[in-house]
Length: 278
Image 1 (cartoon, rainbow, N blue to C red):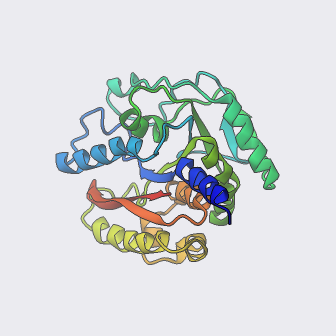
Image 2: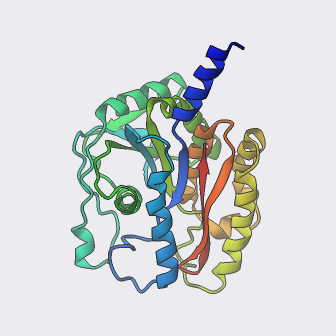
Image 3: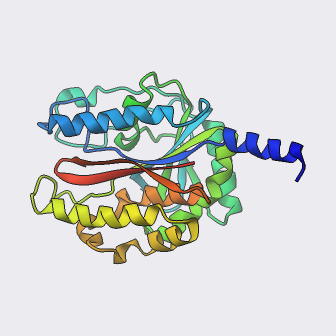
């Protein structure tokens, strides 16, 4: 390999965006008083604010895969000015006045559909869809100025982990196009168990398996994640897996990059973790 080729490869790698899976917490938790443990809330707040420092260069756009949007086929928002979508219930009135007015990314929406179509995924778009709380709650901390064009991509009905790994692989070229891909979910999501003392050991068991598996080389990682439901305590941690599936998209987009466990703390009495690749 010539020196020029080596330099070109180095430049491409240095400009490539990372990908990240982050826990978004519960509802509008950072902005209203929900009686959370202050230390736990402060730790997750600190982590989410730090995510903005992960890319080495400023992103041209954000692509978010949120646990709170599922469609029959992968679907993108296409509005240039997405509204807010307050998809939570029973919280204080001020939580329905939160605003994160980031611009949309219609051109990126077209590019995402092009990549998905090339990989064999029929796709769709929704001009009315707004930012749900899986996007606006964490990103109000990560990017409070709301200046970066942002696009949401839905999960696909059926929640097949292998399909979502393949979706992520299809999106990998975006990393070399200045797009910071974020998966927003939770590594534990059993709503009946939050704040139940019995949930702590369950979350520890599953999260230990997840940390070990996510940090494996690509082939072993993807094989393990595709069979996640066979892991210890898996179904106790995720009776329904929509909050875990954004991790599959992120792992697919990671390619050969190895994961780093970027956050590994207690929140609402259970163990949560976050993963960065690249």
